[in-house]
Length: 152
Image (cartoon, rainbow, N blue to C red; front, side, top):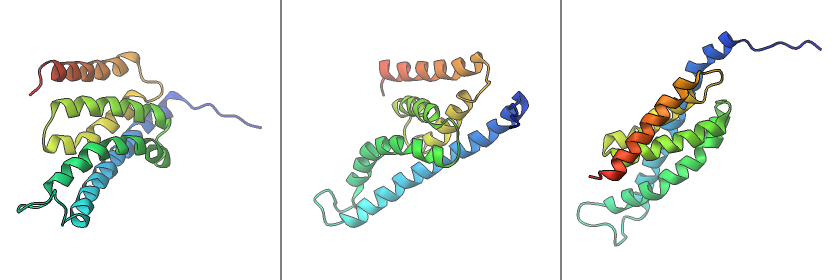
């Protein structure tokens, strides 16, 4: 049996592919949240949560619950799209997402998955030097701490 070793250059060439597919996961999960919000408003249009201006209360409920469901669904989706290893990307992206959610409002929250998953795929890439792993994690930790200490 012939065994071949994976050299560093082939692994390095795969990093942009990992980041693109991880970004696709962020897009898919965000789209799923938006579709869930629209379905909730359509299905429960006659609810007490709905008023003269529509069912905006359901969008908040879907966001509060759905974002955590999306984090759980990230690992199988990353695995399905062949981002390997998938579980470190999913765990680190969850950390990045929580930091972004603490700090951001509005459209930046909608784009949070598109930012967090590719960055997590980059940071967890094989053969990446440790400063490239530590610096983004430290920056997001600082962002989270800043947003927690100085809310609003």
